[in-house]
Length: 398
Ligand SMILES: Cc1ncc(COP(=O)(O)O)c(C=O)c1O
Image (cartoon, rainbow, N blue to C red; front, top):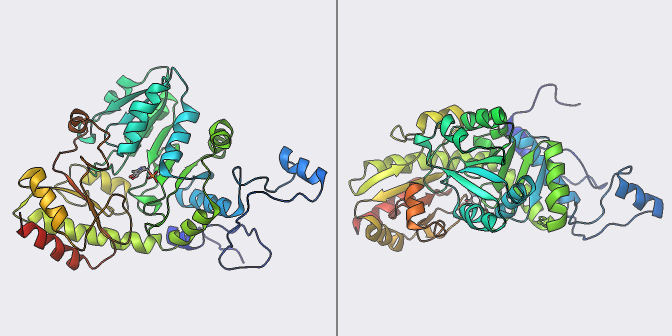
């Protein structure tokens, strides 16, 4: 019997897709490790190629395990279709290069992942695609965004919560500008995951993910996902993905499907622990400033409440004594691991100015609100009291 009412997101996270690509009724779908697929006859092969028969041709174009992940992500983000890619960067590049061509431009928020900034600001520029950046959220208005849009603007792009400052951007505001101008809004939903935030419901047209982070959740795989309408996903496949080949491996897709099943539980724990640690940091006399959208002091607290279920597992903070003090902490912690990336079971600590956001010049970092002494913490699944004790020991040395 089919469920009579729509399933909750928590249930979809566990179940999510019901397409079975095997006859053996496995609970967990097998990994289809194959590069190519047999055709029953010449006519069958021709039918699959021209779309009159269903089936797979070649794993760069499609694979049953990858297809299952794509269906699941479409369900979780509330889109019609999805494309799984080899990394978050290949997902962002695929979206950008299928929407914008030489002579076109895009409008993006300034505070984004360093790799995204570098792709837009340097590599797209080499392809004659111009990137126009809007300063951080607390001074961003619809008029400011509109002022940068012209007839060659092909999409708007934002990240919220933003990497690394955990800035909150108002997705509805950006979506209203995008809709008025008739161009798509692309949202990087990596920091929130679909459990905390569903940009398509707020008016965005495309969602991208570094699935490497919370979707995988275990720090062992790299991958990306794009979600949107079936027509848009078809356009990205035909215009870019099939030719440039940023396909996800079936093995990684299988691990992502496995990781996603615990997404709700993990996100709850990340959020609870991050709030506790952020409050503790905010009260610490050696800490200058804490950036966490769950704190009343965060300028984006109200906007986060309006568009997120909870506030996520990412914290940024500045210590009195600037970069030198920050380095002391990063070298002194023992439980928090000094590493880039985020969304893993382990708490990770890093220095954006010299690591994830080294692609910005010092001037560009200033414009994006990324302080030279800023430390970023990806709160893991440990007992938060142990993380607090670790940070406390390190702060004692400052
Ligand atoms: C917000 C955000 N988007 C995209 C990326 C790029 O993803 P990947 O490393 O999977 O290519 C990252 C990587 O850290 C990120 O933090």
